[in-house]
Image 1 (tube, rainbow, N blue to C red):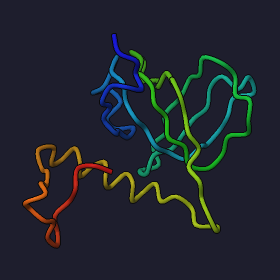
Image 2 (cartoon, rainbow, N blue to C red; image 1 turned 45 degrees about the vertical axis):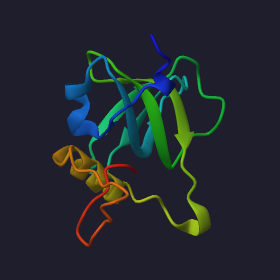
Image 3 (cartoon, rainbow, N blue to C red; image 1 turned 45 degrees about the horizontal axis):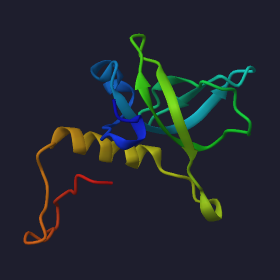
Image 4 (tube, helix red, strand yellow; image 1 turned 90 degrees about the vertical axis):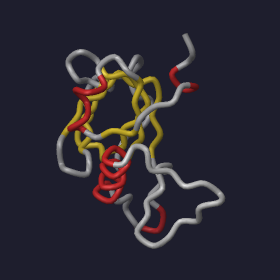
Length: 130
């Protein structure tokens, strides 16, 4: 089986967790709370819904702000993280998780919408890649 990093992963939010059980996913949210053990933390998506993330090893750094998690969704809807990346929030401008959530929703609402090189994007069209 291919490494989870090397396979395509849908970008999801909390409302989509149950549809992706035992599948690799990419989840972006804002860190809400880190468990004292450092092995679990919660993240809120752009709708304010909260997901639990479990790590194989305890955190070795402070985790805050926006974070991207790559992992598998367990039967209980917990994201079993393979890796995570804190998203930089330069110059005091926070990552807009609501806007990101809207992009995720559009990607899932229009899954077959793509643009080719021969078909330039016109006003009102959405790209499927982030």
